[in-house]
Amino acid sequence: MKRYLYIIGITLTLFMVQGQWSIVNGQSYTLEQILDSARHNNITLRNAQRSVEAAKEQRKEAFTKYFPTVSSSGFWFNANKGMAKMDINLSEYITPEMAASIAQSGILPAEALASLGQPMSMEMMKKGVMGNIMAMQPVFAGGQIVNGNKLAKVGEEVSRLQLQLSENEVEKTAEQYYWQIVSLEEKLKTIDAVEAMLADINKDVTVAVKAGVAMRNDLLQVELRQNDVESQRLTLNNNISILRMILAQYCGLQTTDFTLSYNPEVQSPMLEKQDHQLALLNTPEYQLLGKQVEASKLQHKIAIGQNLPTVGVGGGLVYHNMLESGRSFGMVMATVSIPISDWWGGSHNIKRKKIERQKAIDQLADNSELLKINMQSAWNNLQEAYQQLTIAQRSIDQATENLRLNRDYYQAGTITMSDLLEAQLLYQQSLDKRTDAYTNYQNMLLAYRQSVGE
Image (cartoon, rainbow, N blue to C red; front, side):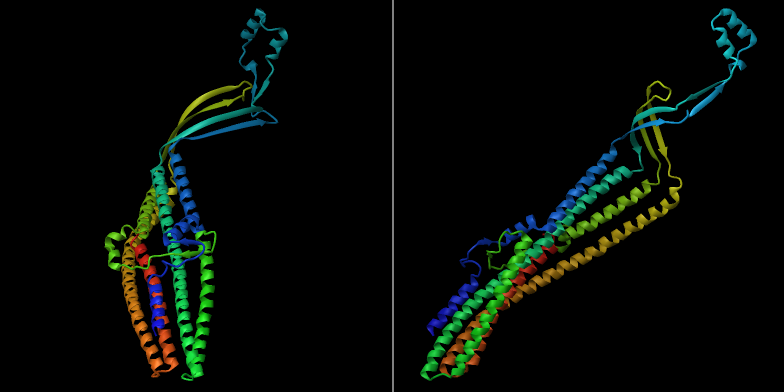
């Protein structure tokens, strides 16, 4: 009897300090270490971080629109005939008196003087080269550049908020795997204690059967119960092995030969309670809705700017040798572009953007209420999980006392072995329920913390 009570005492001590004193091989990880590994190695977070980097480059790209656009071009051609051609008949311009004066002066030979009376043909630009370099500075673009830069900045902030949401999801999944493994390992410890307990009962019943004071059927019931517990051990070991592989892959761990350590103490959930109205402003979901409204306002302004005139000034340097000799010159210019035909469809685009802006505002108001409802739901679940944990702990004490009494009753011959094994099963179930209640509380605690933006 004393030996049996000693085993129960060891079992309860083992359960109450679960996860703290077991000696294991391999690396031991705390929850924070698992989460930190997930943040650095999970592929989902890596892609979300790359999205942030891409949004940052897009913002830098938008900033370049403030600067002049510089372009350079070159052109070479060789035509089968000159692009400019003209016929000249000098006889139409030289009077007889002028021709006589030229002849008397002897400036031109007689043959050249005679050719002046014949029509002549000239052609130019049969081949040539042209090159230029130009710079244009936008002066007014209807606010498209300014608002485009603001929109790119909003896009970068959105990508950071989406990264935070991805981190929350990864942490939630990693922590769920963590507590699943903890739960199964604690149930495995319960199996160890139950096996020791059943081995002690088996030993006592074997002695009683040999002495003729107990039926062999009692021994068979104990052995059947031992087989059932052994089957449970096999299932638990298999599930633990699979979950360790999943957790290692998800968090980038290099081995599955590890154990998990944690603090079994549970504090009142009242320490976690927050003002949901104030907490709403800190949640990434609410901030994303705000960025959606901000983006829709900027898109509306850009749509308006697309229907306004654009003004630019610039200058450049041009070189060509179209007239057989090279020539270069500089120029300054100003441009004004008015999208007259675009006004027809542009007015509808502006109205569409205005509607989308109002939709974003309405969605912010509606989803804000849903987020607060989610906070309250998460808080209710946390309180319930804490109460269930308290009940489970109380059940352990009751199941322990019930098992002790049934053992005494069996030894006194007032109950059957079935009654004793039923009490033992209730005791094991109370330990398992407490483990499930504890891990469920941890999951509800995480859900509440994430719902309030922590």
